[in-house]
Length: 406
Ligand SMILES: Nc1ncnc2c1ncn2[C@@H]1O[C@H](COP(=O)(O)OP(=O)(O)OP(=O)(O)O)[C@@H](O)[C@H]1O
Ligand SMILES: [Mg+2]
Image (cartoon, rainbow, N blue to C red):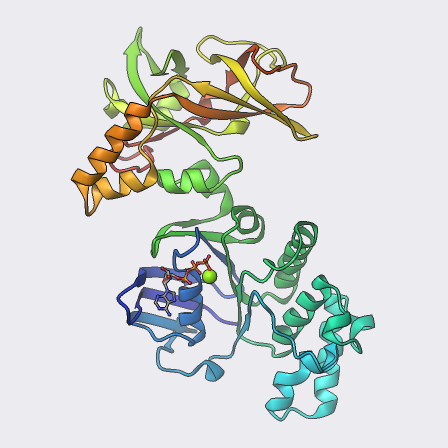
């Protein structure tokens, strides 16, 4: 078991691609950390650098406090599980799982006992004599896990190990891997582009984008206090609804308005976000999660300044709940790419694209997750009640969440 420390870890590939920029992260002994982010954000690159499969351009990787930058992979005592688990087709499950130990000259009896032990944990005892092609997808995935476990490494690194499995099996295996990791308490770094997988499996989740760490924290904090718009929109499904809004004050109350809607910010809410008062008379980006709206007809008591009168465009029945899509005649938030360009390299270019986005101005699609008892009907009006205590606010200039500090 081991603690892994990444210090300003950076990777520039020979063709000039900067895949990872200054990643700082301390992964505790026995901790399960998930790297998540869209395709190409540098997850695999980071993992391969920890494993020693990729050279480090600058920065350091430490395992148990020792810099391992120049240590070959085989001396790092780390086991990797990949997406295509590449089992040896001619060997049965038992031999596949024991192969690395055999190569290391571990006596046959010990190999057999370690493999059998792992097989019990993995529920593979009855499959040990089977060749890969006669195993199910989930069993093959477990054999690949078993191969890593029997080595009793200091850490596991897993790169999208479930992406070859069908949806149902993926859900099962993600619970199994999480349980296994807890039982073995081996430090684990797990890579995925699936935010649900990340949120359900990780002790902590590191959200990455374009080679840069956006935020790392426990799942609940990422959900409740996303550091910026990118994290806010990436975490949660369906994604957070966002719109440009105005903050005003009247009769001592703070109001947020967008399109023809107006919501009252309760004093407790304004108190929890003192920085918000700095935006009075200005625009902010406001976010509402789909689950923080309900059908007012089903809500208990109604209170002023919490309602949205909308027209239901599309009703989607999910069984356990209903998604209602509707249009808000507000101003769209600049797309993530535009915000990024505004603050970085090509501001003029970005201004032009932003203007174009706003000119399109057909309004913004919102989605609300309602209880299945809702009577919402397509093309009919509907009153929604917003949990205004859970609204999110972001600075339109920087995309950063507006919390307690200015
Ligand atoms: N060998 C390489 N040479 C040049 N560029 C590379 C190389 N490997 C990866 N890259 C680039 O580095 C960036 C990060 O790639 P990486 O594989 O780490 O992304 P990822 O987050 O794992 O994406 P995915 O979710 O698609 O697996 C990408 O822009 C990719 O094109
Ligand atoms: Mg990858």
